Image (cartoon, rainbow, N blue to C red):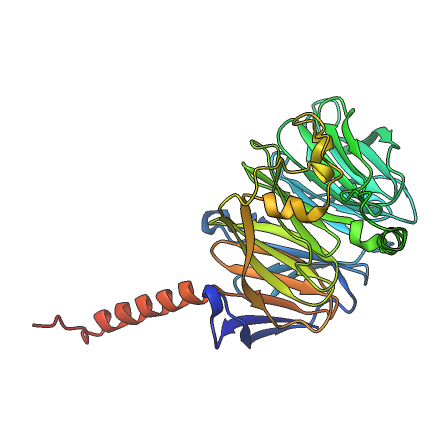
Length: 403
């Protein structure tokens, strides 16, 4: 059962905190595992956005984002589809589970790989030369998509190379820029890769570095909390790389080559997904069922000491700082920006797994409670309602200019 909710009631920071039911959809019966959007082939002129959701019930459902109706259901999968991605240039989309499947916009299966692993593909990202990178357990597998030619009218997907440098399961995979992509693992490994030759550019085991000032018991407690060092997700903009690490959020500035802001306890449980919003805003969701909106703000430099690179010194953006082992508190004091909480979206009763942001439609969140919620920007919707009211009054001749 999926429900779409439209924001109403109180509107903190322009986003609705509670909602009223708009549409109720009968769809997935188990946990939602992936969500993407693409433009409908039949409605390209209207730019009608379709939403694809995958679930542990071994189905993928296509929804119309305007009406909430179910457009099509794909149920030919032999395993859970754990990730989805769209390759705009090739006009296809991919689904990853125990195998990799290639689909067109008409939802025809073009080709697929053989069974890869019981672990399945957990993340996919596009790289140059018609290739994609797939995270499968501890491995990265490079696949090349072969489009139809005069000699062959069929699509094909070929395994090119396997990268075996991670020591634990890969949880996050994202493009940093046109030159590199980055992966993060359950035990805090972060590796930067070259997108062209697939070589390792940089490696770091953990984002934190226990200093000599910590006593043995503190170190034991830190090491026992493996989830606190798991890198669950990345997102980037032109200036910064945002990392969801354990329960915290870290912002790394590419030009300044250092961490400029962090929230070590942004949520009560692990942060599972993050994404950037307009106006230097960031949104995050967590296992604790919360969705939070943050704003990156400038602040006065509190100390002249260099910020320890720690978690990010392996990115290849500068030399390793000798002071990287100083306490985390000094890093926080030296940050030039802050992540300020500006809003909470309360509506899910279980872990919020992921979300999508539409500039025109709002925010769509999906949870382990099988619920998909569509959140509307309260300030924007109020303005649109006022505009429609004035237009209606003008059409009926009920709008008069004040003398």
